[in-house]
Image (cartoon, rainbow, N blue to C red; front, top):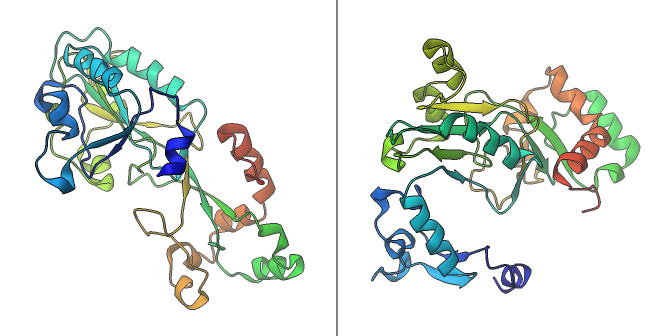
Length: 279
């Protein structure tokens, strides 16, 4: 905690809060007062919000401004993940196109997901095919000291990094409905492309979810024991790891090809996320 506080010292627009509460709909009418939103007023110690660093007054002003209407964007990002350098610009441009000029409509909301992400693994996540094993033996593992990268896309879910709820004037968290799992977002929310075709509209397409296909990859995820979800997290124990996800795809040529394109993928990570192999 002290290292994190040192990192953001003097940056008052970064608010560090200790809380088990995960609020959504910042400043919207169904969230009550600012203190209620952060649960600073809570009498239950385990759920009380503690402001460790940052200017809470500045945040409260933004909260009250959001309560008065306008566009609000809320993006999920865990501490061990990252977003494409053009993510915010792309998101804000799309939000302006579809959420601006909404006339106090409760349905004026959109949900965005990244279309693909690049995963970093400290241990080899690739299937143990003869060519991969030969390459590892030939290089004595030295070339992989920085870990392994895997470009991954699953059209059936919205991954955590980059998951964004956008609200136009008149919309609040209750407008979107109940909280959904990542896979349920894709199944139960209508595609914005589908809504656009049906409504014959190019602008102001709302009440739907959109995948950011222009950003490939849109996010970087760290797949270690710090991950909230343990899917495709490898431990370094061969007996355990051989039963996990990616290891089973011994005939997936596209996946195996990525193993031999690690240098190219590291260059992409540096270009789009400013993360180098030596970071």
